[in-house]
Image (tube, rainbow, N blue to C red; front, side, top):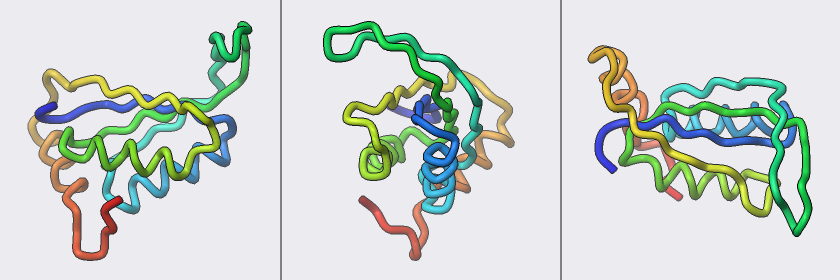
Length: 113
């Protein structure tokens, strides 16, 4: 995956969503994470149709950070199978995309998973 992407992640509560968002930005795995709440999700799980209120995280990152982001979300998330879906950014304002690149550069103080 080249370039930049938007990553969709759902969380079971606003507290969990905020915690994940802060870690992703602090560790430079995402330049920005928006939290949209509440969202209602309807899905199949363990043979049944489920319906739950969740928080949707929308993370903007560089594609080369995606696998690290996935690994970190799996460490932090309470779900057995968390939603982590990357959508490529096909175009964007050049200065915004440069900002994403600058904010997702691993620094000396950043731990890689």
